[in-house]
Image (cartoon, rainbow, N blue to C red; front, side, top):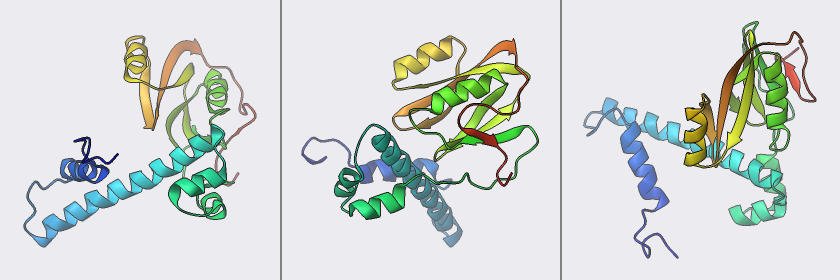
Length: 196
Protein backbone atom coordinates (compact mmCIF):
# COMPACT_ATOMS: atom_id res chain seq x y z
CA UNK A 1 0.00 0.00 0.00
CA UNK A 2 1.42 3.36 -1.02
CA UNK A 3 1.89 6.35 1.26
CA UNK A 4 -0.78 8.25 -0.72
CA UNK A 5 -3.35 5.49 -0.14
CA UNK A 6 -2.87 5.66 3.64
CA UNK A 7 -2.57 9.48 3.78
CA UNK A 8 0.88 8.98 5.32
CA UNK A 9 3.71 11.28 4.19
CA UNK A 10 6.08 9.62 1.73
CA UNK A 11 9.81 9.25 2.34
CA UNK A 12 10.32 12.10 -0.13
CA UNK A 13 7.94 14.36 1.83
CA UNK A 14 9.72 13.53 5.09
CA UNK A 15 13.13 14.20 3.52
CA UNK A 16 11.93 17.54 2.14
CA UNK A 17 10.72 18.43 5.65
CA UNK A 18 14.14 17.44 7.02
CA UNK A 19 15.87 19.53 4.35
CA UNK A 20 13.72 22.54 5.28
CA UNK A 21 14.56 22.03 8.96
CA UNK A 22 18.31 21.70 8.29
CA UNK A 23 18.58 24.54 5.81
CA UNK A 24 19.72 27.79 7.46
CA UNK A 25 17.80 29.78 4.83
CA UNK A 26 13.99 29.61 4.99
CA UNK A 27 13.41 31.06 1.52
CA UNK A 28 16.55 30.93 -0.65
CA UNK A 29 16.91 33.72 -3.15
CA UNK A 30 20.59 34.22 -3.93
CA UNK A 31 23.06 31.65 -5.30
CA UNK A 32 24.70 31.59 -1.85
CA UNK A 33 21.34 30.76 -0.26
CA UNK A 34 20.84 27.88 -2.66
CA UNK A 35 24.34 26.60 -1.89
CA UNK A 36 23.30 26.43 1.77
CA UNK A 37 20.36 24.23 0.72
CA UNK A 38 22.76 22.05 -1.30
CA UNK A 39 24.99 21.74 1.75
CA UNK A 40 22.03 20.64 3.90
CA UNK A 41 20.94 18.11 1.24
CA UNK A 42 24.48 16.72 1.18
CA UNK A 43 24.36 16.22 4.96
CA UNK A 44 21.09 14.28 4.56
CA UNK A 45 22.62 12.13 1.80
CA UNK A 46 25.66 11.27 3.96
CA UNK A 47 23.49 10.35 6.92
CA UNK A 48 21.15 8.28 4.73
CA UNK A 49 24.10 6.31 3.31
CA UNK A 50 25.36 5.57 6.82
CA UNK A 51 21.84 4.65 7.97
CA UNK A 52 21.50 2.20 5.07
CA UNK A 53 24.91 0.68 5.85
CA UNK A 54 24.05 0.24 9.54
CA UNK A 55 20.59 -1.16 8.68
CA UNK A 56 22.12 -3.76 6.38
CA UNK A 57 24.73 -4.78 8.97
CA UNK A 58 22.05 -5.03 11.65
CA UNK A 59 19.88 -7.17 9.35
CA UNK A 60 22.88 -9.40 8.59
CA UNK A 61 23.66 -9.77 12.30
CA UNK A 62 20.02 -10.82 12.81
CA UNK A 63 20.45 -13.65 10.28
CA UNK A 64 19.46 -12.11 6.94
CA UNK A 65 21.40 -13.48 3.95
CA UNK A 66 23.32 -11.38 1.45
CA UNK A 67 20.91 -12.73 -1.18
CA UNK A 68 17.93 -11.33 0.75
CA UNK A 69 19.68 -7.97 1.17
CA UNK A 70 20.46 -7.82 -2.54
CA UNK A 71 16.91 -8.78 -3.52
CA UNK A 72 15.48 -6.10 -1.20
CA UNK A 73 17.75 -3.46 -2.76
CA UNK A 74 17.34 -4.67 -6.36
CA UNK A 75 21.00 -5.69 -6.72
CA UNK A 76 22.83 -9.00 -6.81
CA UNK A 77 23.98 -10.89 -3.72
CA UNK A 78 27.59 -10.20 -4.70
CA UNK A 79 26.97 -6.47 -5.20
CA UNK A 80 25.28 -6.24 -1.79
CA UNK A 81 28.14 -8.07 -0.09
CA UNK A 82 30.77 -5.93 -1.81
CA UNK A 83 28.99 -2.66 -1.00
CA UNK A 84 27.92 -3.33 2.58
CA UNK A 85 30.47 -5.70 4.14
CA UNK A 86 31.98 -4.14 7.25
CA UNK A 87 35.51 -2.79 6.87
CA UNK A 88 38.35 -5.13 7.81
CA UNK A 89 40.41 -2.26 9.24
CA UNK A 90 39.42 0.58 11.50
CA UNK A 91 39.35 4.02 9.87
CA UNK A 92 42.46 6.16 10.21
CA UNK A 93 41.95 9.02 12.65
CA UNK A 94 44.15 11.39 14.59
CA UNK A 95 43.52 10.54 18.22
CA UNK A 96 44.78 11.99 21.48
CA UNK A 97 46.61 9.82 24.04
CA UNK A 98 43.38 9.03 25.91
CA UNK A 99 41.34 8.11 22.79
CA UNK A 100 41.04 4.78 20.99
CA UNK A 101 38.90 2.99 18.46
CA UNK A 102 37.24 -0.17 19.79
CA UNK A 103 36.63 -2.71 17.07
CA UNK A 104 35.85 -4.35 14.91
CA UNK A 105 32.64 -5.07 16.80
CA UNK A 106 29.25 -6.27 15.65
CA UNK A 107 25.72 -6.54 16.92
CA UNK A 108 26.44 -9.60 19.06
CA UNK A 109 29.69 -8.55 20.76
CA UNK A 110 29.43 -4.74 20.75
CA UNK A 111 27.89 -4.29 24.22
CA UNK A 112 30.09 -6.94 25.82
CA UNK A 113 33.21 -5.24 24.45
CA UNK A 114 32.05 -1.75 25.45
CA UNK A 115 31.21 -2.86 28.98
CA UNK A 116 34.52 -4.66 29.33
CA UNK A 117 36.34 -1.54 28.13
CA UNK A 118 34.14 0.51 30.47
CA UNK A 119 35.58 -1.27 33.51
CA UNK A 120 38.96 0.16 32.50
CA UNK A 121 37.57 3.68 32.20
CA UNK A 122 36.84 3.75 28.46
CA UNK A 123 33.48 5.11 27.31
CA UNK A 124 32.06 5.65 23.85
CA UNK A 125 31.69 9.18 22.51
CA UNK A 126 30.66 8.08 19.02
CA UNK A 127 30.68 5.20 16.62
CA UNK A 128 30.91 4.21 13.01
CA UNK A 129 30.62 1.03 11.02
CA UNK A 130 31.90 -1.82 13.22
CA UNK A 131 33.72 0.41 15.74
CA UNK A 132 33.29 2.81 18.66
CA UNK A 133 35.36 5.90 19.39
CA UNK A 134 36.17 5.67 23.10
CA UNK A 135 37.89 8.01 25.53
CA UNK A 136 39.48 7.16 28.86
CA UNK A 137 38.43 8.52 32.23
CA UNK A 138 39.34 7.70 35.81
CA UNK A 139 36.01 5.96 36.50
CA UNK A 140 34.20 2.86 35.22
CA UNK A 141 31.37 3.14 32.68
CA UNK A 142 28.36 1.04 31.66
CA UNK A 143 26.92 0.96 28.13
CA UNK A 144 23.47 -0.07 26.87
CA UNK A 145 21.79 -0.44 23.47
CA UNK A 146 17.98 -0.19 23.55
CA UNK A 147 14.94 0.24 21.33
CA UNK A 148 11.96 2.36 22.29
CA UNK A 149 11.40 5.84 23.66
CA UNK A 150 9.94 4.57 26.96
CA UNK A 151 13.07 2.52 27.69
CA UNK A 152 15.29 5.47 26.84
CA UNK A 153 13.30 7.83 29.06
CA UNK A 154 13.41 5.36 31.98
CA UNK A 155 17.19 4.91 31.62
CA UNK A 156 17.77 8.67 31.36
CA UNK A 157 15.79 9.12 34.57
CA UNK A 158 18.19 6.61 36.15
CA UNK A 159 21.33 8.58 35.18
CA UNK A 160 22.05 7.19 31.71
CA UNK A 161 22.89 9.53 28.81
CA UNK A 162 22.26 8.94 25.11
CA UNK A 163 25.51 9.18 23.15
CA UNK A 164 24.24 8.07 19.76
CA UNK A 165 21.49 6.58 17.65
CA UNK A 166 21.50 4.16 14.76
CA UNK A 167 18.09 2.96 13.69
CA UNK A 168 16.44 1.19 15.42
CA UNK A 169 18.80 1.53 18.41
CA UNK A 170 19.76 4.20 20.90
CA UNK A 171 23.13 3.89 22.66
CA UNK A 172 23.44 5.01 26.27
CA UNK A 173 26.23 5.18 28.83
CA UNK A 174 26.51 5.86 32.55
CA UNK A 175 29.45 6.70 34.79
CA UNK A 176 29.40 4.26 37.75
CA UNK A 177 31.62 6.46 39.92
CA UNK A 178 33.85 3.47 40.74
CA UNK A 179 37.59 3.88 40.04
CA UNK A 180 38.65 2.48 36.67
CA UNK A 181 40.72 -0.70 36.60
CA UNK A 182 44.30 -0.28 35.36
CA UNK A 183 44.77 -2.19 32.10
CA UNK A 184 45.73 -1.14 28.56
CA UNK A 185 44.17 -3.92 26.46
CA UNK A 186 40.62 -5.19 26.77
CA UNK A 187 38.38 -7.94 25.42
CA UNK A 188 38.39 -9.92 22.24
CA UNK A 189 38.00 -6.79 20.12
CA UNK A 190 40.87 -4.44 19.50
CA UNK A 191 41.26 -1.24 21.49
CA UNK A 192 44.01 0.66 19.76
CA UNK A 193 45.11 3.70 17.89
CA UNK A 194 44.81 3.22 14.12
CA UNK A 195 48.12 2.34 12.52
CA UNK A 196 49.54 0.87 15.76
